[in-house]
Image 1 (spheres, rainbow, N blue to C red):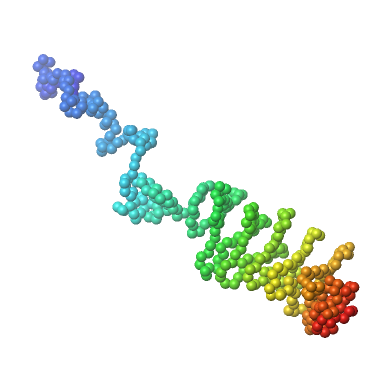
Image 2 (image 1 turned 90 degrees about the vertical axis):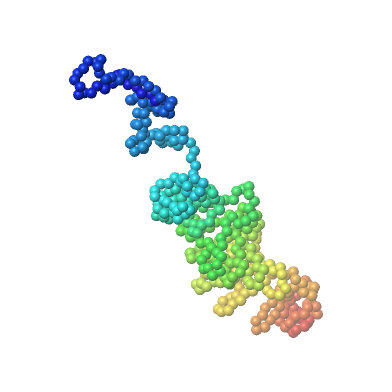
Length: 409
């Protein structure tokens, strides 16, 4: 310790009368140091130090309550520049050492959050309002939960599981939902899969509502697969595909734009029902149930081909349950066309030389036959009223009675 007084100290009592200076009680200048004995403490007025640190400087930094009143600057923290200069870590359990704002709190087990605020701790970040967690980021699992609306300009996500997923285009004129499979991955699963699991559900798996002038749905297939496949596997009797058109336009418009030889519409039926059923309920005149227009003069308007006939049924059947109109009408409105209105050709041979061309039935029945030039008399079995054309010398014959007797007309 160092005890210093830079000038002598007069200890003479003030009550004594003035005496000569040589008789006064005076302590001469003291300069005594015991620094090494008292841990580096040196006392000497404003020059007092502790381990070479000014006592005045220390007194200016700490108030009478022992609190720092100046900035703290050390190797890990600088309150003057408001910077953390070295790493800090949280406690090893739950919220120990967490950084928080507000009055958010938790119990000793790190559970039962109360209050409002945000806490940053070793397992992530949690935000709560009035004791209810509103968002959390789990540092261990990477899970993120949000109780409110999540807004982002862009992002990349893996698997999404949502109770209700609403995609709303706020302002930009761009694609709202774009689902692409990367070109380097051979996809063997569905890119989009929609499934309604409960059997008594009445809602739709997909509903598209469009009020604009563009297409509500457009499917473009650039690969070798089909553009759309509709399959109804089980369930009650209902349509696999139902189209309801409530405007004065086509219910279904099939356009084959490519110049190739592909088919615009191909209907295949492996079951016992009809392949195509058309029910026209409009009673006004001129509303055709089927209207076919062919602008190509080098191809047929309608081609019917029966490849399997184990039940001996007609290729075309016209039936009427009411009305008195004509069942079938063939009209050629082109006056410059000198082709036949109806052309019949049959490759099926009966009794080697004869084709069965037309069968007519009603109150009676008859068959029209076509010969290769052979007389039917004695060579063809018919019934009364049958007619055979193209027989010997181009003659026509009729059958007067059931049997092989024919009479030239």
